[in-house]
Length: 483
Image (tube, rainbow, N blue to C red; front, top):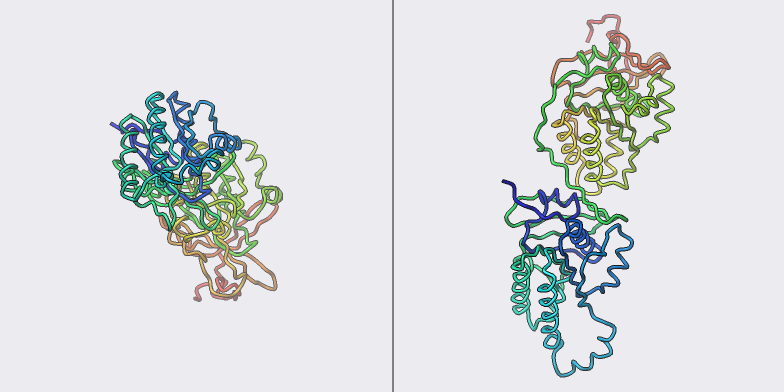
């Protein structure tokens, strides 16, 4: 029987917590100024209101008026949320001379505690958000007393049956490590190098999704994008062959590429990599299957215009719903956000082919860490759900130079590697295509000439009389058996 959970009101966070918070426990929400702690609390309470629960926001720093004014910029309804405003009033400064003899802690602690107890006893909320418990530190005479009071207070709230979310404002001068021990879970928010992340470092009594997950603050509040895990359970699918619709190309591949396989299409700029990928999608559309292209470099209109010139009816495919072209501005997305887009496309639209155009554009979204880890997770996920993945990879050398499959070190992921190559032949710039790797079956070892015409892709006969094609400067041989 699954454990009952309390939704945080943030879908991505619930996913990280494998369903939400464990009810009747207290959780520490850590983070510096502007990281979104209050926003998490508002989502948490608003979700309770949506489920007809009684909720309480206890604020000891920011006033209720300020919180409500700030919340107007978010699509979060605060009307049914009860507030206990214990923040300093303007009169506090004018009356501060009354503390000349007695310590502020001695004067304030008892009435503050009494107000909290009275409100909780009268309201009996099932969800409480406390912002922030750091203020109690200033009401205590020493660290030992603060720890004792904080622990007692948290226990009081949870024994009343409430699920509690409380914030701290830890810093190097005033660390909050002691609060980690009295909480049942720790959620840390971080804003660093212009990137927002969230991580769960403690979650008592339950598993959770480890690691840092991308976070974004929007007009709708907070969105969290969990890291894509490559260990998702594999779905059953038929490992059938996907034809390109070009007989000579299928001969090279001994039928085509496989369902659930990762295919890298690699080559220099302008050699026809994207067009080749779209050819597979054109054939899939004829079977009624949906494909999606995530383009990091070209605009949709550019792709449409180019495909119309070479007999690939991309516009008609989009209108019928068998193709989607999604422009991605790499600098605006983190890898976790992009992975979420792919997941939604695959799981909601039953998409069968995904093309990423290109790996170099995708790499721009990797602000920290390496591209291999993120591409690995994405490709393994797509493999497990039976989606054919096309990765477009650009290499720099047009002709000559050292032949490389990729520049990013992801070739080990590929089940298939199709390479396209410019070559200089009889004073003309021509193109050749070959298969470098095919994990699930044999493939043709020869290279063939590739042409992109107004009638579509044309693949010629094997170039058996040419040598040194991979160098980009081939030479003729009168004897086809000559190495």
